[in-house]
Amino acid sequence: PLAQGQNIFDVIRQQDILLHHPYTAYSTVVEFIQKAALDPDVLAIKICLYRAGQNSPIVPALIEASEQGKQVAALVELKARFDEENNIGWARRLERAGVHVVYGLLGLKTHSKLALIVRREGKGLRRYVHLATGNYNPTTSRIYTDIGLFTANEDVGADATDLFNYLTGYSRQSDYRQLLVAPVNLRERMTAFIEREAEHARAGREARIIVKINSLTDIKIIRALYEAAQAGVKIDLIVRGICMLRPGVPGLSENIRVVSIVGRFLEHSRIFYFADGGDEDVYIGSADWMQRNLDRRVEVVAPVNDANLKKQLKEILEMYLLDTTKSRRLLPDGAYERVQPETDKEKFDCQVELQQSRR
Image (cartoon, rainbow, N blue to C red):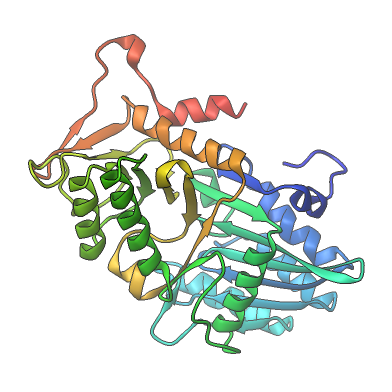
């Protein structure tokens, strides 16, 4: 949470902010929307609601903003499994309050986690963006691990504006400055990142991939990972759920390791790290490496541009790879085995360590 008296927009304008739920409070995200609703300088609020939950404070804040005369647009996904009834109810309440409610694009489920605030500052406008791996749902934020990013980066703000215009039917965007958006450019860019690591490895430069996702089933991505591994790229995959890639197969995937972390909190964050010859690219977002996420859903994956935040995310990934308590290793035959510490002193629970590091 912010220190008392701090203005959230002043803080974000000074530097990007990274949140790691549930280890950092979700109240900062709620406050971002609530402050925007009441701020006389805020002109517009746009948000994607996939799973808002039953008692969301986000929706009342959007209604308040609309009643204050702000332009408010909410993309509500009616096909969010098990949340259909909640979302229909929220959509009706929002519409009655004058919010511009849209239901996404024909044939595509909108799974992106994105909010845009347009604020009048001085003689111009500034855009503030929140991008995340998890839903705008304070209840699940206490039991799911997710990453959120606040930024006032101009390119990201312009991309977010273009995306909302695309989602609300005002334009069809074919490319973006910094955001990776499915089904527009996400598959192409992710494949290019993997192939770039292979090129670095062949040239003797630093090459590594660390990815944390929920599922890996996309055949084209798996094929690209195999080819990168054969080129010499060291690849670590933290995949909680289904993984159709086979690590450690001689001549195919010796350089790939796959682990699954199943602990107290549901691992839900998606983080993508590429060494890029030492330049290091880090992205977070809503998409898994599945065909449905890459081709049949609207997903947003965003770059983390701040060097300190990149370092922080890389350290988080390394902590997951050190886990010897809740980690299971995927074997070449598709079976999993528990990762066992050699001694009690080597026991390491990444979720416990992350909790303690945030106290």
